[in-house]
Image 1 (cartoon, rainbow over the protein chains, first blue to last red):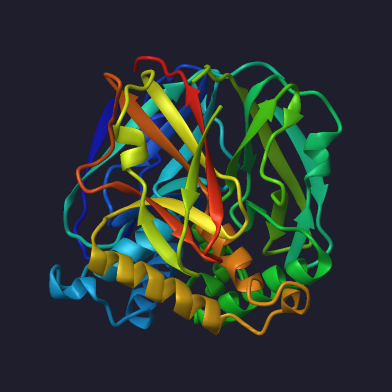
Image 2: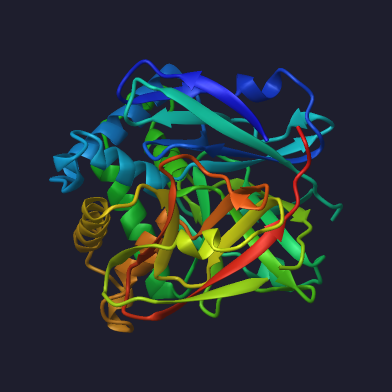
Length: 132
Length: 132
Length: 132
């Protein structure tokens, strides 16, 4: 297992982390990328500043709408981040062909911070595949 | 990697694509099914016309409720489809036993178009497993 | 494939099932955990009674807010559970290192019953990985 470190700067922040996976050659097959936290998520989506503003606004609104929170009593402000990150999910499987990331044309790897700023870690694991 | 093509006919459309995976023998283990797009999703769920009407109505309502959108300025009408597809997710792992799909009794493979009609692609990859 | 049985006691119930995966030694690599149902979900999240009350309340509110349902006509009360479980998702990949579950410090495996009480099953599959 390989780990990437990531520093987030805001409470809610969408970050394109595709570059972590394009700068080197990987074994063909699949990479599993796992967020090792309970208040952040990862997904494949389109990149761009307007798109990121939308991801962040929707996350902020959902967090506000879904309260009030019991967990608040102990960890002010982050129960909502737990629920949202759990529901969005924190794992991706990335196809690797000829050593390179082989996803759809518009698919970028997007990390969604929901309780930042924090130091974050992504665990990366390689899985072999078989011809079909 | 194998690719299935899929033609959707409506803007928001739930389609049972289980038949793509039942008509042939697969290597035992797991199949990874990945949507190669940023405005469509895939999940395991129950099939049927009433159920599909519910999936489609919830998707349409969520898309309407979560606006207004920044990304709208550039791609009218599909920022919401990006956010919803990212949050639902576009990957499934399907167990294969004795060459056949081995999911739960009521589980069907459902593709959710969120910005159609379009020509869509599903990437399918085979993964070996070990006895437990 | 190995199956774990699980008995839920309430209509909507978050259950920490991490203990199912910590009491024994697993082959190094990954475990795929799949919910074999269409009205329950699984995810990695923080545990604790306040946190669970939040998960359950959000699930109950989302289910109430998203109606009315077409599928209701045939299966009273569970169309919403289908939609919510499909959107949250029912599969997790768990890293195993030195025979033990190797997830983040606060990550626990949480099963979310959305149409209980019922007898539930989790399918567990072992996948080998390669060094990176």
